[in-house]
Image (cartoon, rainbow, N blue to C red; front, side, top):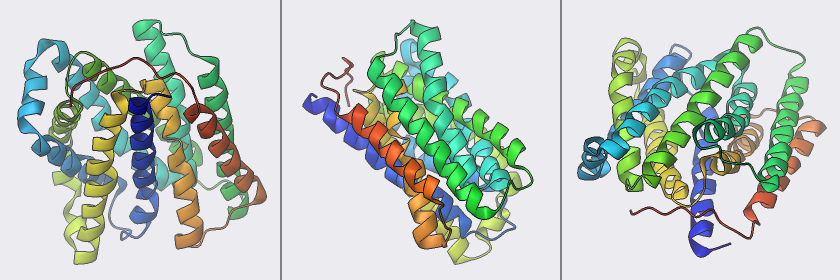
Length: 302
C-alpha cells in the first residue's frame, strides 16, 4: 500500500477512535437533554468550527460550480445524520443504534458509488465489509442478550439507524466527489459541514437550552463538538483524499468496536460471548482491508 494511502487509512482509523467515544460521552448527559439537542449541538457547533478552520478554502468550494453542488447536497446528509443517529441510540440503545447506523453505512456508500459512477466493488471490499458487518451484528446481539431482551423502541430506533447510515454514507460520498473535483479536503469539509450547521441552527435554538444547565453538561457538549466532530472530520477529509467512500465507511466500522469497549470498561455494561466474537470479526475485516496492496488513485490538494 502506498504511503499516501497508508496515511489516509490511519486518519480514518483515528477518526473512528474519536467517533467511538460519542455514545459513552452522551450517556453522561442529563436525561432532560434530548437526542435532537445533542445531535444539533455536536454537528452544528462542530460544523461551524470546521468552516472557521479554513474560511477562504470553504468559501472557495462554495463558489466553484464544480464543487458547490456536492457541498450543498452533502449538507443535507449532515442535517439528517445527527438527528437520526442520536435519536436511534436514544430509542434502541447505544449498541443497536450505533451498530445499525455504522453497519449500514458501507452498504449505502457502495450503492451511491454504483449509482453515481457505476464503480465496481472489489472482492476485498466485499469480504472485509461482510466480516465487519457480521461482527457488529454479533456485537449488537451480545449486548442485547445480556440486557435480557428487546427493549421498547428498538424497531423504531433501528429504522432511524438505517436513515442515519444512509445520511452518513451520502455525505461521505458527496465529500469524496467534491475532493475529487478539485476541492481541498479542509475546504470541502468546512463548506459542507458549515452549510449543514446553518441548517441545524433552528433545531439547536429550539432544543438546546438544557445543554447549558451546568458546566459539566456544557463541557460534555463541547467535547462532542470538538473531538468526535471537529477533529474527527478533519481526519475524515484527509482519509477521503486517497480512500474511496465505500472503503472509508468500512474502515470506520472500528467505531462500534471502540464504543462497545468503552461501554464495558467505563459505563459498566456487560458483553455476552457472541459479542466478543463480533469484536474479533470486525477487527479481522478491517485488517483484511488495511492490508490491501493497491490504493485507489485519488488525489486532492490540501
